Length: 220
Image 1 (cartoon, rainbow, N blue to C red):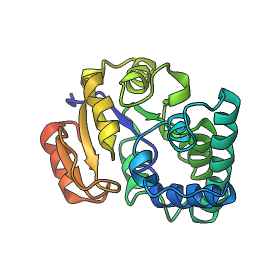
Image 2: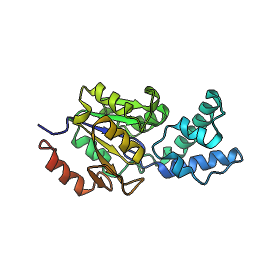
Image 3: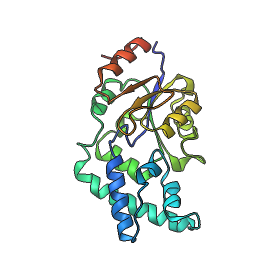
């Protein structure tokens, strides 16, 4: 029996290499607002959109204003990403999901629900995920473990028996706090502490070798 009963995936940076386009979308949106922000990349890593909006525009915004700014930026992001969606999938992710489709798999992301649907439906990947949890379905987003705890519960698997794939320290922290093991994907950050292994993407031969060593039931 495989050591890991289920795989859990982040979305941005793990399924979709989207960080640069998120930064570009924010820059365009802020330009329309007459603003600039030199710390966008730092602000964005692994955070829920409402937290990013408040960091940029200030804590005094109403909930309606936070939603309006976030929704407008994400709509812009989707339009910018639409013609590049397939090309921006993290290399090897489609083949990896297909190879492991017999194993329960879930997605846990801080992303906005429309973005999750845009990626999973637009790239025809939803079929691989029996649980899909975004940061708005839980009280506390990453780095708290709630999205991964909920995804594991929906799969009927103990979190300690899950393997999480993450690209940010915020996400790694969430996975570890859930009690799972974490594999780091180096699309956003090249080094992540606390992970079992860092790989470039899902084509990295080190990933297959690690899974063969740590998961006796690995697919080939």
